[in-house]
Image (cartoon, rainbow, N blue to C red):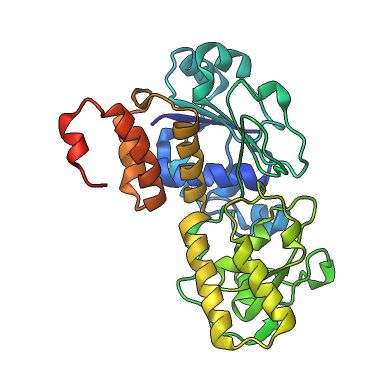
Length: 336
């Protein structure tokens, strides 16, 4: 699977970076980029990381620098004309739509993906019917617009729920006086040691902090989560968090119960909310909703999807495989 990832690459953009990190983790150097996302790779300097939004915590410096695959402007234009790529992804359609006039002439809309990760709910209507459009802050169902949310690198998820020392983590979102941590380890320990971590909607509902809390075995104490639109953060475990928050407000919770809920949230994060799983969801949506011909994708791409132990992906792909394998007489004998 040859993928061209187009973005501005000017700094932290959690939605775009989620997709880029997931793509590189899954497909390595088969992902080509138009700019050097230097801050996401392990050869990025500590000074660079400290200068980033959020001090580069969680997303910065995670990828192997050997996976870089930056193409020149001339190379990109040449390869687009040759239809070298099988999928072209715009990591942030509001911030970069380079080469689109050429891309739209050479590729059908089923092979073009637009990611809209802005805090505002406004849609880039020009691109709606010119590719597969994914929107982060999606407050209602809109035809030809599909929900998407942040993801967290799998390496950041703890394996077991840590022991607890505090009821609530020290950090209060929006209160800069509580932003006392200088290293990612210190920041994570604040959540690892706590039963709950306060979080809320800021400019938009989705926020990497929600995922950092759960990834460290802590329960988000999410203010007004019940007001979050259904289509926003659609893979987020809203009901479990709302229930646990209500219980915390009205009852005395046992530590064993808190740890049980934390474990469920850990499992959900690992199963649905890693950068890789978000990319799998995105690709799967492209395959199923738009009913792209299986022949459009290389055998390597299909193998790579199935090789991961994604049960949900398996059952969705089943319907596609059934359709394209209907001529195989033995197929109907398979017990799904």
